[in-house]
Image (tube, rainbow, N blue to C red):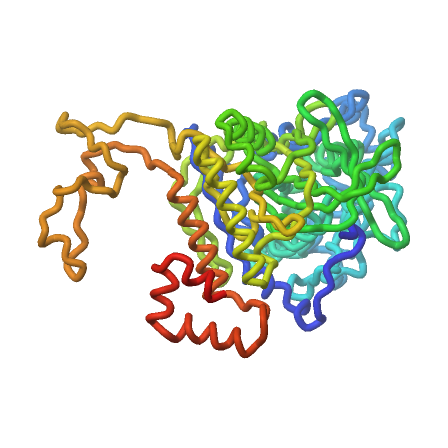
Length: 611
């Protein structure tokens, strides 16, 4: 997937970007201990999720990159560095060019013209610092679209900070570090318009740039400004401040952004761009726990649907080849990267424990070639430390809400308004030796059922070893060289317990039931209550008198496999296996003849014999 190429939609579909966002539904669930709320903890609804408002001073100190060691803002202010001739600060203690009116008092209809003084001041602030060269340069976008409904996936924001090495006439999404959106007035409609434009810009960068780990932005309505930050874990916004009078906040923001290193601005230093024949590829470094590093070059994208949402795991799967001394090796492998909970066991570790249990239980022969194998895995390291979401340091001030936002209705439902801590995320990569075709992409029933038969053998080996998969789906079953293999063991569990084990107790001190929850003992129900046309009997295990954990057992995996079978049999358009006439006749027997369908579901080998 090329980083410098944006998604191409039809012009008609792009005229109303709001329609694209209106089809998106965002659901976020967070549960954690309660902490003391603050006045700034007001959630802000955006098109890409709910943002959490924090005090501006905390945004500057905990979210922004730190100022370089040789740059002291207090010393510069004391020496009047920004108040000299052509400086950004006037003798009246205001930002130059606006007086007391702000952009709303500037003549002219263009939004960029109203904020031209802001652009001039930002350049002046950066030039005041002597010594280090700035990483970013600020530009006003005079060719942009001021209104959100005019935005498309190719429309750049009202203004932006880009890498200093970029040419002004050839700026792409991959070059932008900070997005800026303007409105001359500060009405509620203007504020919402800016939020919508900012959401569109952040979504484009996070979705279309695989090297983007997080992003910054600011919105300005007249003199009022907010600072924004988002990563794959959450969206954070500062309190509103007057950038004309509160110039110190603007100074620190501009200096922190302009002189930060690239990895502090969201770019992934473990991914480098390689342009070959007009196509963009990436060299990706994967580092194991023992510090062993391997480099892989992408040759194609296998899946990136998980990266289309801003907040989430952002899972991408690449088809790659290994590089040894800069030379590509033969044979492709699959590389998956995602943002996972830092406290959760990594997929590669779970995979290793599953296979070890299978070998120790002498299920090796049955499990042979029924699982994908891992080449290397490990957390991504940036600047000699694990790549955590930067806002994790501010987790004690983020309000929690179990909410669902529907853009069609525009409603926000908040269940838990209190503040919480949230689990931090870490960047993780795993490389598989096999590149397979997911079962979801197969349309031949012959291949589907052969793959399900192979997978059933692998599941049996897991179950005999005390493990359950818990995440069976057509996307997690791969076909490699004609053989079905199990993938994505991240959710696999040993011991069949879905939650920490607790002894089931009855509040009346009576002995607990020995059966699984939902399975009453023989004779426990009266015969007349077993009438299928009567009311559903309630067993004692469902009573609130019992405190029993939900036990996940092999039957749940087998049920998932059964539903996959039903899905392909009844709900998928499949290829003609023999000839169209024979297939149509067989479909008529199964889908329009009750007796044949009943025999297929109840009689052993009936269905396979018909096929």
